[in-house]
Amino acid sequence: MAEHHYDVVVIGAGPSGEGAAMNATKHGKRVAIIEDKPTVGGNCTHWGTIPSKALRHSVKQIITFNTNQMFRDIGEPRWFSFPRVLQNAQKVIGKQVKLRTQFYSRNRVDLINGRAFSWTRTGSRFVATRPLKCFISNRRSLRPVPVHTCRRM
Image (cartoon, rainbow, N blue to C red; front, side, top):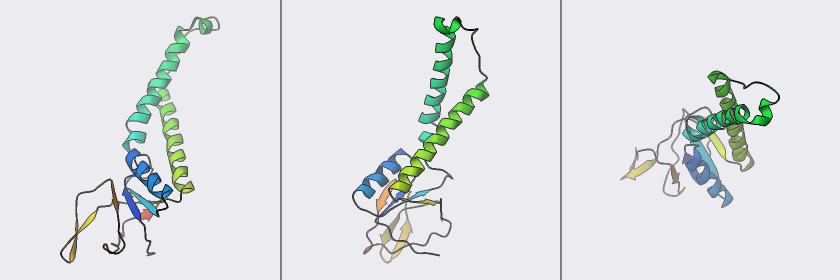
């Protein structure tokens, strides 16, 4: 297994993780993001903000079309099934994932798929602590910890 050295390792590719990674890379640090989901974006992109705004926007467009007199002159109101509206939201999510993946690539941030934990030194041992959003590894004080379950995205 190849050994990689990073100045900053970010746990999670959601909005906070993305911000931390981009800030570090803009300051000349070698950065990796470890994400346990198959695609980047976090809950914001896949379950929260982006899907709800995409759904709201689609519904608003349908309502605007159906209530605008200019459109009434050319035809009857149109109705869309909920699965069709959801399909549109999925397209928006796909675009967001592609955009964010390109950000990481363009800024040379390595994306690693797997689970990560921060480590703290207790005497001569390293002990797993609760997951943190971001931690900086000082190469002199932390030894590399092999993570066999991680793979590049």
